[in-house]
Image (tube, rainbow, N blue to C red):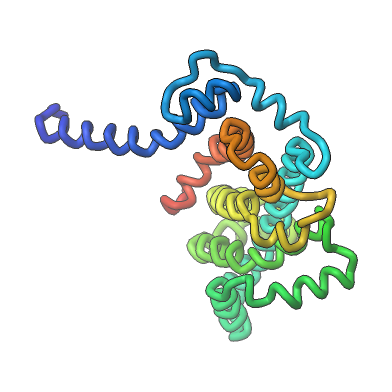
Length: 277
């Protein structure tokens, strides 16, 4: 029987304190984004807004030109969704082949993927940019999708391979006895069992792609297909001290990725817990 002791109360109080300290930056973020310009100048960013307003959100979403936040949001969503889809499709196939291969080349290839995870992407940035420019992919949304799928493929293969190695072959053998071919076995049997791994891959790679600034700045800077971090950078430079509008952009950029995490968090937790039932 559970007893609520003094030690339990102390642990609970400590957890609440840590939670409040963690949420403190979000508090300042929200109250500043809801302040009108004149109130921000008089009270700063520490006091709650006396007259909360959503005008800052409306203004940044309706802005045009180089700082078109709404279009940048659309581009970020397209690039992130396309990259996740490509990584799930090709990463799961590659990891499945490597995990089920008994040949020596399978182990060698897997270790090459591990080495690729350790190498920083910036090492190959110059040849990547030259190749993308020759193919006409610089400044293109789908060029960024191909770039992210290629650079994050080692991470996706590494995550998927660990799950595939723990998956018993009995499921596949049973499906093969029923007349299913290799493709049908993978799509109908193996991939659904890998839902926890898919959730883990989707969230981790999605966060990387969504928050990436440097690569997007190099390949999309100055184009009409800028992502949200790049547009936010230019917006900050043009507004200088208008923190209420800057923080409004930050909140807008947080909403899609938080919604995606809430949708996929069950699979994400299952993935870290080992997840195959």
